[in-house]
Length: 167
Image (tube, rainbow, N blue to C red; front, side, top):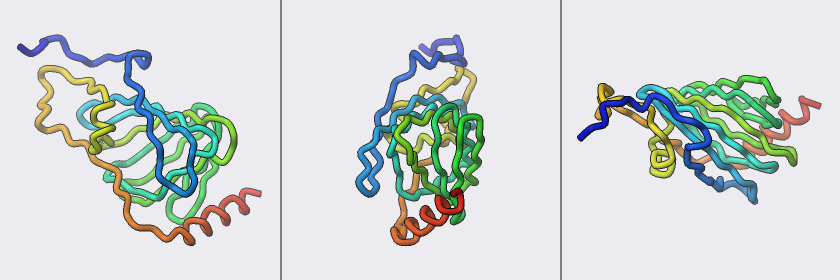
């Protein structure tokens, strides 16, 4: 029997924590997240330790980040953006991008993905869906990250140029 009470609310303290380790260079930094979704969007609280560095990827979601604490660089369209607490960063749907926490301190980010970034098994299983009995879950569509080939020398050049421009 389906519970008639909708699951439209959750508390961060009750959400599972997913530990992720990006495969890039000599990355040893921790990355953990907690995640919820509705039918059209997902929200992730992501904690990236100092030194966190992901490889370039893209997804069929628009992504909007709000930096809650710490600093992080996002790279998109051949440019780097140094983000600090209070900053917002948009990553357009389908654009190759990556992130690098160059400092020693943890960075905490609220990320919104539309449609939900739950197309990978680990993200899907960690995500709490805030849905009710009247939501047609057969229409739920989560998208995955796509990890295509990339030119490491080009990535290194983009990062070096962005950091040098920042001064």
